[in-house]
Structure formats: C-alpha cells, structure tokens
Amino acid sequence: MIRVIVADDHVVVRNGLSHLINEQEDMEVIGHATDGIEAYMEVEKLEPDVVMMDLRMPPGENGLLTTKRIKEKFPAVKILILSMHDDEDYIIQALKAKADGYLLKSSNDREIIQGIRGVYQEQIYLDQQIYLGDNVLSKLEEDNEAPLENSYQQLSKREQEILPLVALGYGNKEIGERLFISVKTVEVHKANFMRKLKLSTRVELIHYAIKEQIIDI
Image 1 (tube, rainbow, N blue to C red):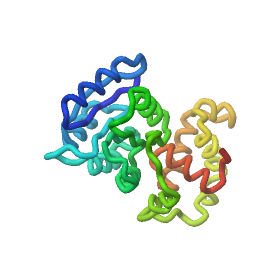
Image 2: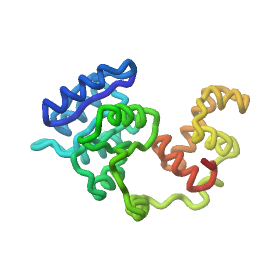
Image 3: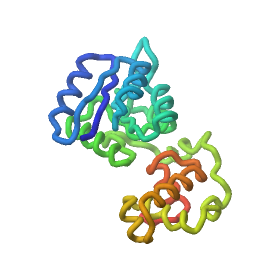
Image 4: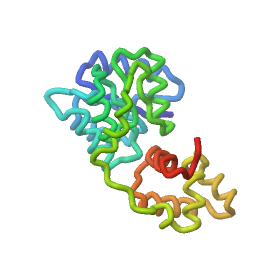
C-alpha cells in the first residue's frame, strides 16, 4: 500500500482527496495536516510514502518551507505539491525545494492518482496542464552545488559497476545476481557512491547518470 498524508488548510479538500485516495486498492490515507508544522510532525510520527502538500496553508508554515524541512530529514518521503498556482516561478521553487511532483488543484481524479503513483515510483511528476519554458533547466540549476570534478572516476570499480544498474531500475537482488555479490554488499556500495556524489534519491541519481552519459535513455 502507498501510505499518504494529505496536508491542506481546507477541510473540504482534505476530505475529498482522502475519499479519492482511499477508493484505490493500492493506497490509503494515514494522516492529515492543516499546516506545514503539523505536516512535518505527522511525517515524523507516521513515516508515509507520499505527502500531498498544499503550498499555502495560512496562518501556519507554508508548504514550500515544510517540503525543504521534510526532504532534509526524510529524503525517502515523496512530496507531491498540490496548488492552484501554475506560474513557472512557483513550480521552479517547489522543484528546488526537492518536491517530487507538482499538481494543480484543477486536476481531475485520474491525474491526481497518476501523480501519487508516479512520485511513489520515483518519477518527477508534473501536471499535464503545466507548460514550462526552455529556460527552466537553467533556473533549476541555479544555486545548486557544483558537482565534484571527475566524480564518477573517483568511484571504485565496483561502485562504477553498480551505479548504472541502480539508475536503470534494477533491484539490489538483481544486481547481486548479475555481479555475483551479496545484497548487503550492493547496499553498502550504493550507500557509498550516493554519499560521495552528494545524492539523496534515485531521481537525483538518474539525473546525474544521464547528465554524465553513464546511461542512455
């Protein structure tokens, strides 16, 4: 089951989303929040898979700040922003805060469910109604820490073997069988290269691997 927390200051929105999500066979709502502070506390207590996060929840902490805080301490939790704003600047700020997806409140039920499943499967999910200009990538890269020079070459041979397999979606067991090593050894090497490359999620790893031409999609 995909375990979801719904964070929105409007009770009608929370109840509507909860009803929709709980109708799905593969997901359930395990908690609600009315502002960012409450959302953070619920994540800390319940350890969800996905948080549906409103951007503005007055008078409490806004969703953007809460997204940053959650991602810093719980990087595995997926954050799906749900907002009425389709402005490019809002979307860029959300993605810079490490949000995993962005949906509009005008989205239909099918789009919302696809968004939840998409971020759960470690995709970056953007509402189909959203149009982003050609300059978005450069804006997203602003303020990002520069990658280590020749960072891939600084990895061990075994780490270089495992990294592209992880980026391509192979599980630990499959990688172990391919390379004739234990699952635990795969996990250790994966943790090491993620730390060396200063990456937190598989989405970041995929972006890195494509950028460095380690894999070809």
